[in-house]
Image (cartoon, rainbow, N blue to C red; front, side, top):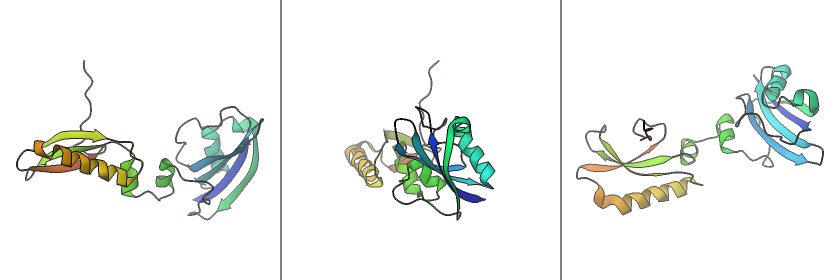
Length: 176
């Protein structure tokens, strides 16, 4: 596997990839400039060779096949990432291998439950929250919920927090 730093001029009104985020070979992408006629796009792509890297770009930017002017297509060391001019969005963190468990969790939905001590299978959902900007904001929300609702906690139960991949996460059921 190799890493490629790629840039091209995109001569379309809509410069975004077909899917968000783009295919897994595209580790990150950015619009770094524009004019009246085109957008300047950059991407980091992991592929076995330059041909596969081009195919990865074309998979999510198919119009680049006919309207693309490649600015550069440079091989880089596998762990390379661009400088701070190209900030990493949430989906990019995981692909660049920089997401911590905390970073992955605070962006999604979480729930506070009361859980029976000694029988973890028994829980009652107390509150659900999400769209936290920072881990600190998420932790503060959890503290506020637990403090505000602690009188409702059954005796012998305690607070538990879960995120959407947890077996305890309560999902809405569609009515029939």
